[in-house]
Length: 402
Image (cartoon, rainbow, N blue to C red; front, side, top):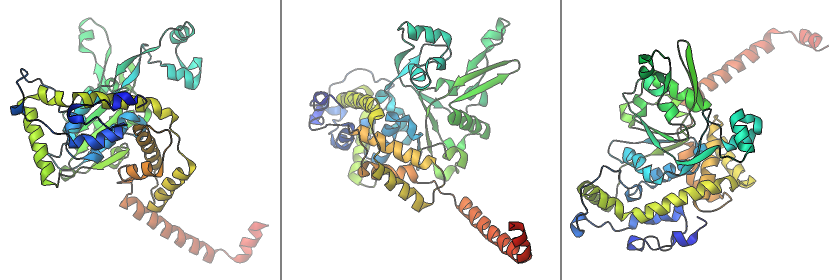
């Protein structure tokens, strides 16, 4: 975002002209003309590659939420809720070409330079402390990966288990599960509302603590699991447990496209992609490169983005008016607003940033059961207090005060 020349570089159909930030790019890209395969020369056999994220038609809230989660993992992940065929899974898998870089530890224990910044030299292992003193790197840049948790995954696949290859050599060793493989990556769960309870419980523990421990007989191991959780679900197939719903920061309602022109454009793009995937991806290659660089720049800018007091007061007032109890509401709201400002190449959050992310940050955070439960408790407490006032003599109350 700091390099304006790279942003305003003309792309196919001049889409890049006048684009000064990631936010501008997302707003403009849907208007790009998509050339059908019949108008192009053949470029070879189609490859098994994902649909271009920037070729998705409409669904701006869904695309924005996913981008904000890439920029700022502190938003707490994204949940996409909607009927089948609205592009939820396609959108998540399309993020592969936009994934930014993160520092990947070179240490067996996962030590990172940020650990020293936050906790001092004692926060890393002795070997890494020695490396740091000698000026040697503790991590290397590595692209974020998209890890998918299949619906039929068993608990051992998720948390890990005994390494069968080691048993052959009379050794006991644990293999890493999907949660450990997801550390500092993005973990995608399709049909998250249909996961088995034991897998959901493992997800809850790992996402809450950022790590988890596996014990198999005399062998145990603790793994980091600091991931961005992305889920999708069709509400007509079943409800999502409140515990796992609470682990998703942004909640997006994904509806079908209502405009017939947009629906036909979506069809043309899908048809072109299925006919020749490589050519379809190449049409958005320039914009994809720009967007990936912008996401990385936004991540680099994010630590410097500040939340003014007046904006914070506005957000807290909204949360208070809605009667939301969970403190995760303001965490998601403010972190999403910071990410939105960074996506627009700004270092200060505005009311507009806050308003843009409010719906996706605060919806589905109130519970009718909890409201009724608290109302019953208030009624019960009032009844107890009235009974207390009527049964204790005033003289006894006065003696007690003396």
